[in-house]
Image (cartoon, rainbow, N blue to C red; front, side):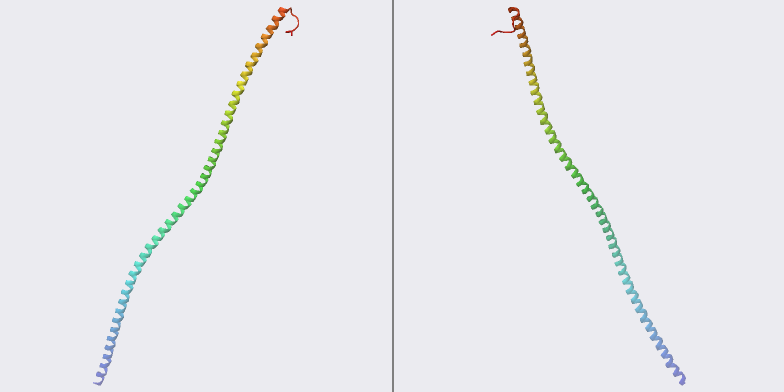
Length: 163
């Protein structure tokens, strides 16, 4: 049996190699399981980060919508203020016009009062002139009556009182 002993080491070599291979494969399997475990942990962390990022993204989008809403409110307020300025300008102009109208009204009242005074004075003057002219008419009538009397007494001579 030299050939049997020669086979033995070969089979021992094969067995040793098989064991070494099996051990290598076991080690490789353990390394792969460890890497899978590490990848799973990383995936969980990444998923948590992704959820956190998505939450932050949603918050950012909400904030952007709020900013846009504020911008619209600012534009609206600016329009109202611009309109307010126009309204204030119109109001100021209306107040100025009201002051001018009040002043003109006061001037008209003063002129009307002066006109009433003139009218009253004119009426008084007219009444006075009417009274004077009536007095003149009465005096004239009296004088004419006296002239008639004198003519009748004096025989119709001459023409008036003698000096």
